[in-house]
Length: 330
Image (cartoon, rainbow, N blue to C red; front, top):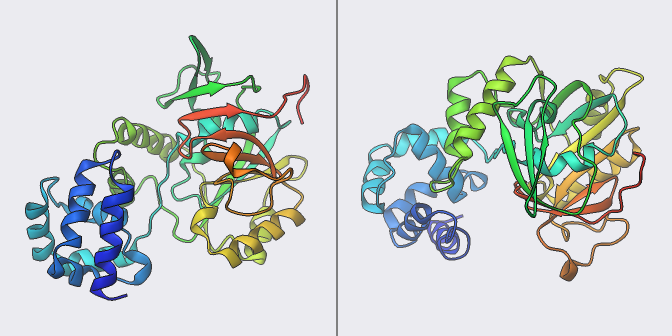
């Protein structure tokens, strides 16, 4: 990828992705698109490490000021080697515990006890849905779900439509697989996860920081590996204790997996003695049963074993339940 390709990529980000979410990132991206010298620096990065949110997060983590483009660009030029070196070792690992608010209605349908295996776990913040509190807002009604110990330091608020079952899962074992697991106790990894929050997204840093504290206080081993490799996935799944229900989750992971790996992973999940719970764009693959009609589906889809059960915000801000919930659980 040449500097011209970097320019095009950042212009597209400034035009189509940043507006309405982060004015600062829109300004920085537009600046890169109009600045050949900055584009040349970013062209030194591996092609898979040039995404604007990743580059911007790394610069902020390293100390770049959250100021207008000229100030930021001057800092990048002065620290170009450091930025290239650090960004080359990082990857986008948005670990948003709020996604648990979208996962919970699916997990609540499943009889426990549960062994929870998350693919693309990052620091494992979505491996603790039973340790968070939830406040589902359905019209004027607030439905509170709390751990038995009381209100959690992490309180997830979510707009709800429909009447799914809502209860905390009984999780007796948990682990995750990630190409580059992050350690919730590591100062650098914590700083990186916080930096991945876009400027202007209020409340997310505080939520992630509190979730990191919960993850750090519980020893949850994460496995370094490629979850799309059938042998790796089967080996980790085999570690789950016998006599419990294995639940494999992929919340927001599959859009970042190339098609061949995605198809390989779904085929392996079909062969596992496990329940698969996922949050995905409804048009990402043809595995839904029944098929999803994109024009009739808003947001992402929450699925259980290929069955779409709810339309959800990709980061868990809303749930529109679409599956009938029988008196008993699955």
